[in-house]
Amino acid sequence: MTPRDRLLAMLVAVVWGCNFLAIHATLGHFPPLFAAALRFAVIAVPTILFVPWPKVKVRYLIGYGLGFGTGQFAFLFIAMDTGMPTGLASLVLQASAPFTVLLGSVFLRERVSGRQLAGISLAVIGMAAIAWQQAGEAALLPVILTLLGALSWAFGNLSSRQAAPENPLHFTLWMSVVPPLPMFVISLIAEGPAAQWKSLTTLNTPGGWTALIGLTYVVLIGTIVGSGIWTTLMRRNPAGVVAPFSLLVPVVGMSASYFFLHERPSAAEIGAGVLVIAGVLLGSLKRKPPAPALPAPEDPRLAADLRV
Image (cartoon, rainbow, N blue to C red; front, top):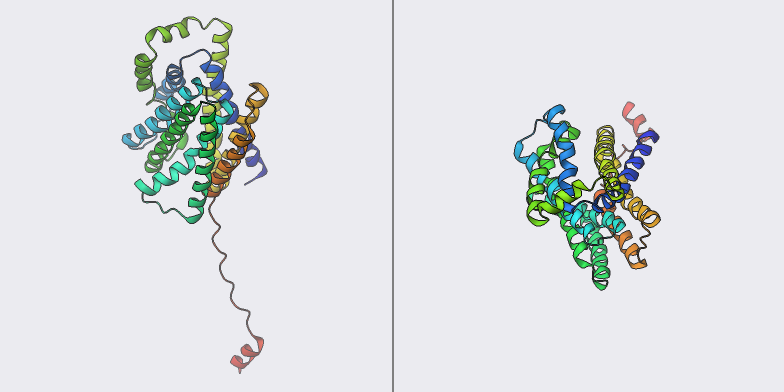
């Protein structure tokens, strides 16, 4: 991996970590499900008009859209709207990695190594510690919702693997066509048309402008720029080299939340977060194959005997 690519990978981590601040700003004005519907609708329209079809089976595209798009962001946005700390959300969402490994072993019959099981165990211990800590503060529900978002992301990953798109960026953009309609219908039922209409008619307010800036960041910077750079890096470098840089996302997310939102995680939450990141890293990195054995040096005396 070249130094330039390393800098780009760190840039994506910063972009995605700050994405949680943008979501926080968006949810300050829009109802959570309606905000998620808008987030994807803004991408879906130009995608249909200008982006080539990714040449994958429709069922895998729908599965990815429902898992990665609809499920993940519905649960995440509701969790953050009901009290999930922004920085902690960026950390707990990393549970998608061990969830993907487990689901892959169940549904795709992928082999799980001892290293992966050890990593999953560490991550689960960290998640349980965070849940226990939040339960003591009467805020367990947002953690559970965020974990459900991570689980939905993992199900989306299975569809993505089955799809095996030739152009991952086109596949990701076309995925955005799936969530808007179900998100809007669920929002209509759960949040009501009055809340939707009020959020649109009050955009010309300080809170409305802040939400629009946040939504613009999520769509343009977080999704298009971040995903575009990440996809390029995954093409140019081995996945095992690029993927660990995503572990910087919760570090950036929690640091940004500390400085801008004055969120101060407890020592127990920081320690649990270290366990989660260590577990995800341990489970995602592949062991290097052993180097081929070198031929034994030739005994010059034996060679001389053979020549004779």
